[in-house]
Image (cartoon, rainbow, N blue to C red; front, side):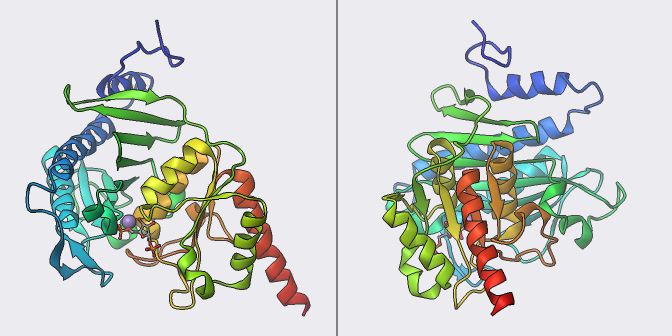
Length: 337
Ligand code: AHG
Ligand code: MN
Ligand code: MN
């Protein structure tokens, strides 16, 4: 018996990566190794998360990160685990992490760069609710053997060569794309392996789930408030975990839209372009979905700083298009009034 990719049932992540790499005769195997390094760090972090209540690693770390947000102990642990795995693996020349202000320089002889949110959904850690890790992989523009530059790290999302996320939920999953469909792997803890469980993931074209923090209702523009009212009139389900990875993953499977718009206090929203939005936008598009900031494609935004924020509308294509229409109408209303 084989899967529809011609792979035997029970395909491990390693075998899947190898089979794909064999399809590219000039592939050097470095990207494959990099994906394996991320999976390894994910396994290690998964173990720590599962023991968090026992291991004195719940709660505040007592510091704030570059965004001025409280760091949880697990944020710091996750940052260390991923940085260490990427350093030891040797395939990465530099990292941008949510938890560090500046570029972390690793192996100057490597061609890949990583942007990472080591732990997404920090506010949910202590409550034993799903959390995640989000990563984007880019190829450097600067010469091999030199230090990576700011320009290397400020590439638009359309230059990503791979992206993915780990979801530490009721089971742990790794979902990634290298620009050729999206595949999901579920972790089997007793074997210590990720197995291919979700082949060629496709998001439903339309959905009935909307995910937004409605607590900020009066902070949003009228167009967003109207959209929320429309969702309610159509009896859509409101689902908001507060872990972007978890909310995105559910909508990917079931169909829906995730919205994090501008607010009065934060005109650029909250989510970070480089290590939250771009990766999920790449996955959404590869799965047949869309991701915009309301006006343009997320992956076409030219980043200007490492920790830049952007509004995000992501999910089922029809739903994201609908929100785009709302913005267009608002724009033309302004022009004509
Ligand atoms: P992080 O834990 O990496 O800082 O990300 C938290 C993000 C995202 O996961 C979530 O969807 C969003 O913050 C929730 O924000 P609000 O509490 O403002 O809704
Ligand atoms: Mn995050
Ligand atoms: Mn985070």
